[in-house]
Amino acid sequence: MEFSVDLQPELMMSVAWLILGVVVLLVAAGLFTVICVFKKAPKKPRQKAEKPVSRPESFYIRQKALISIDKVAFDLSHSNIDTRESYQRLSMIMRSFVSEMTGRNFTSLTLTELKNMGLGSLAGLIENCYAPEFALKSQADFKFDSDKAKWMVKTWS
Image (tube, rainbow, N blue to C red; front, side, top):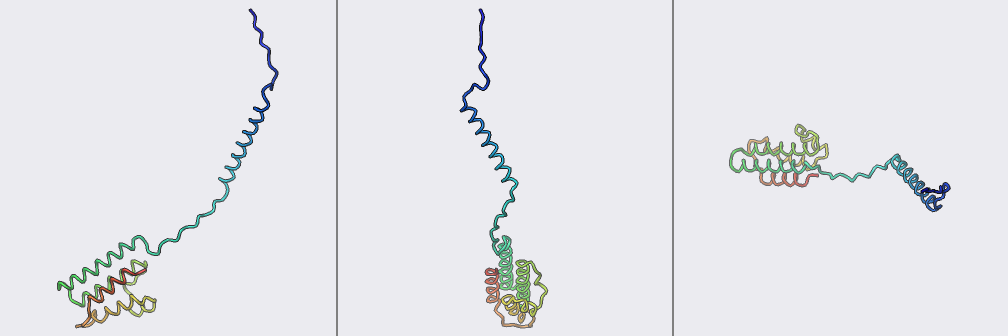
């Protein structure tokens, strides 16, 4: 028994398959080109959102200052320190607070230098501390001045 197989002529397949293959090849080449162009295209920098004015650590700096002011008031009320020392401590707490918040050293500046720098609220508070700090006796009200200092710490921007 003999079998005979007739060979079909080349490219005897349907023309639709040939067209479909060419279209898929062109689409793939187009996508490859688009991807390459977008990868090499310069990226536009995104607009960065404005950072808040107060730094995250400012909360802790504020809390530390408020706790220090309360400790001085507590020590004064329990006669652990006198009025003069309480005002010295309050002055140093406020100067240190502003130094930590601004990143600039205010602990050794004079009252005139503070006023000339435009720090009116700090200069006013330090000026209130000067009389009781340097006088032998004073009628200063530490409760009022400590409340003023706390308000300044809470509202400092």
